Length: 318
Image 1 (cartoon, rainbow, N blue to C red):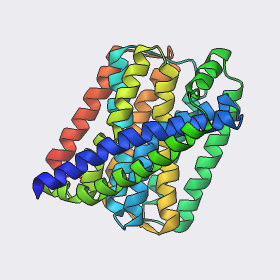
Image 2: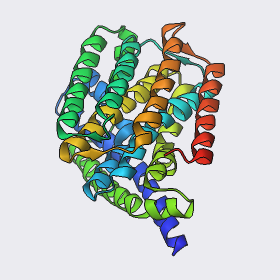
Image 3: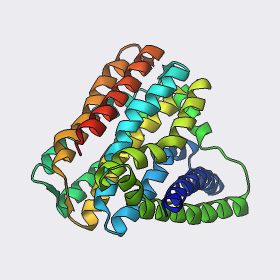
């Protein structure tokens, strides 16, 4: 039984990795076929692409009533983004950032993180709170689009190239449809197996989402970030991290609360979300200084995440 549960969990992660990559290729191919702006498509993909595994897992968890698992995954993914994804990418190669909109977007994350703490201080995100967060996501995306339209030509080229994919209409439709099915089953298996996997590790649903599910669903993003760093695509790496984190904080949490009022564990507003805000605050001077996240700064982010992880596992703060 234990072997079956772990097998289902790991197979679900593999399906999420394969499906997430293919659905993005299919979507970008369809956007190109219908002659949507490569720049706008690239910006959308930077925000959404690496969040696909977390999005489908959280949607499935919320749908079947596993809100604690979804909450843990949402904030846990942000902590993995800032600590492991960005830190390991910077250790692989220094990240040079030319995309000037990223610093203001990081400030948006900090402000919205504080807003989430305030809205959830009473122990619940109401449906109105959820709609406010969804509206905030739309406003932030519109701001990012406006700021990025006046970005350096080099940045615009990077975003446009990111949306480029091969294949005709038929291939990209097939990619999108098959990938969607693969993502559905991957999310279904993870949400089904995760509570039992967490129980074998002595974890409740919240901590399971916060640690093994968040790290597992982030593995493809970490691998992609390391490769992008080695190619000199620092803007894409940092854009992924900030875009994905904003998405989790606003659209994911807001969407779940809009669907059904969302009870929040005390630690969520007193510890987990403030920890994500602290990572963002620490990252801000790195982006505002020499616009370069070096190996030393990457090591600091990784060590900070590992220290947080040890504290959570030892103290049981969840």
